[in-house]
Image 1 (tube, rainbow, N blue to C red):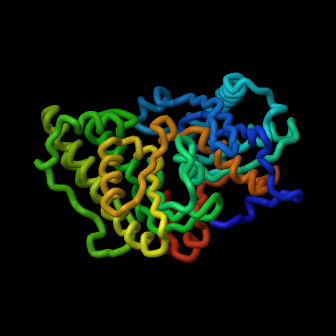
Image 2 (cartoon, helix red, strand yellow):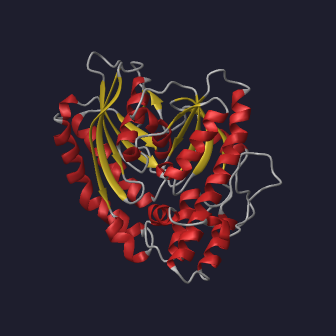
Image 3 (cartoon, helix red, strand yellow):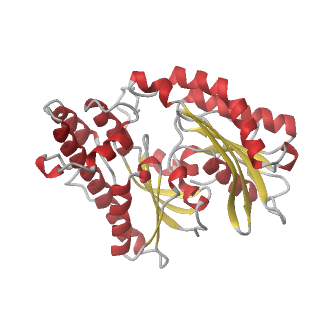
Length: 378
């Protein structure tokens, strides 16, 4: 992903960190968390001065998933209080900020508009640069919140809505190596858990249940075995596991199926990542592997990927658990890194429900070809 029309280079060039670094307020409202954070980027790395997250889990639990209209309304009600609390906990006032960063996509566009509009208001009122941040780029840099991570690195971004392998050369400079052709791994976790009657969000509950299970009882399909690329597919697994869930009669049956599902998802992530590692290692003497996104909080998957990195001579890094799921600290950091390069956004930048990290690859080789049909994945 290179600099595109959503960014302009500041007329006075890059913004210097200065002795105190760059301090940025970040806002995140792409799904069902209203979040705000203040991050300071200095020569010593990224320091999270505050991170406030209001979760809407209780509001959506009765529906078994996120309801966009409810999410957007909650963001409207909560954003001001959450942002004020983040500033208070950081111990600074708006005069100490160097910029304001807000998620501009991808995500539920009603929610994205709330955070982005609030960010625009702060930028206008305080005469601050605005940085519209790609939510996925936030995940891409999130590991840098826990440790100084040098570019380039190989990234597995695995969350509820996204599953991609990317070569990350720097902020705004990423190439897609593989992506899901249907469902994401986190989506598969949640929908299978729902079929098993585990509630929402299902991923963490399924992980807990799997700890007492024996997945060898169930045989689940393996996707795309005839292909040698790095793409993923979880829809067949999701369908098969959902059907098997209807045959589970006891808690042990459900635990065994949960273990089988978790191992199947970990296996596919590992297989595709290994292909990417082999290709990446041919071009880069310094081998760094980062896994980020909500699914990176799954201990079994994290352990499987860490073993894989060790096998192929890669260093392994994942964000601290608190920064795996959606948060505003990663948005603030991405914004600070962009601000340092002089990349800011016009005040009329639009919210985007779709926003691929590698737009050139997405346009040249779209996952979903134009067939004349429209749908959620189109």
